[in-house]
Image (tube, rainbow, N blue to C red; front, side):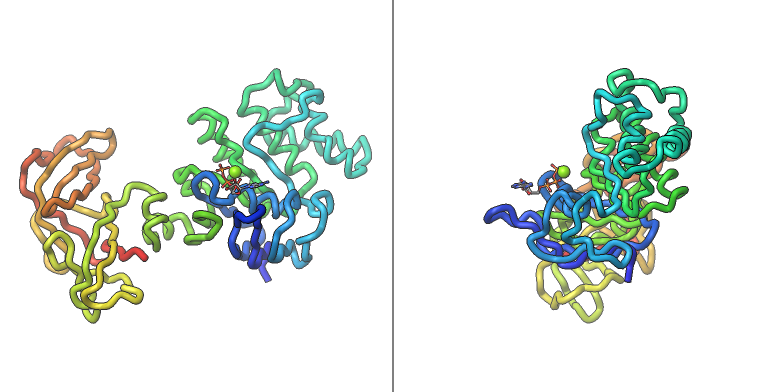
Length: 352
Ligand SMILES: Nc1ncnc2c1ncn2[C@@H]1O[C@H](COP(=O)(O)OP(=O)(O)OP(=O)(O)O)[C@@H](O)[C@H]1O
Ligand SMILES: [Mg+2]
């Protein structure tokens, strides 16, 4: 059994079901991210893990113990919220030591532990400050220290970075990840920011309307989205209507061209319509190559984005974008130029 087992978890609020039959096994020390749009049920699942919300159905097991109906204070979880939620009338040291005091730790031991935590988050000098005397990023580091001071079994982070500005957000997410690795704390992190999720997670669960759409490593989610929802949520994918020409040899018609995929067609039969996806960075320009797909297209727009150049082309009215790395020595195609868009068989993805 995995360290954290969530089975068939469900939450209804009146007639609305916020979480449908959600299951996942999380290993000790894993960093899992729940990623999805507003209202998809991320916080509700986290609150059930923390014990703030009772599941309508299902089971939560921490380290072999069923905690589904165990109160929060006996679950040994640490939690950090989006808003800093520090106690405003307590100093940094007071905030970090608060849970330890409640747990009955001896004052001397609390001091030692608080010092350890302060050095871990590199705020040793700020022990006597009050929350209002610190920046948002510093406050969130204190909230993190407070959450892990009690050595929780599971750390739950609900959009802890979303109130911070972009630069601090990136440096703090790296700090959180490094700390999590160092302490080997099993962590569930919630965000609606796909880049954040891709950059720090061992695995991502993409959620939509209270259901898991896909679970996998960041590269698997990014490179092989299984559904249209995941494909549109995770980046800038070309989604193109297509028709299965011959299911037996995986040939697909797109914009009047018969192409090949090496990815599974699922239950699709010859003659059926479907959606396919092609990553902009998987497409190259140049002469068509044997053993690769090629689409004849006309360049519509060329946008210089810095390290990459995004080219929008049209293949029989079907817009398709591709990205090429910026290279000062190369000549970019011109608007109106006829080009061949080339990509390998495995870069033609079939969406459910
Ligand atoms: N206490 C509650 N009573 C009734 N409905 C609720 C309650 N809490 C959440 N909901 C509903 O459940 C659904 C999921 O909410 P939840 O807060 O889990 O979403 P979320 O994914 O965390 O969204 P966000 O990214 O905006 O924080 C929403 O439709 C919300 O309105
Ligand atoms: Mg939320």
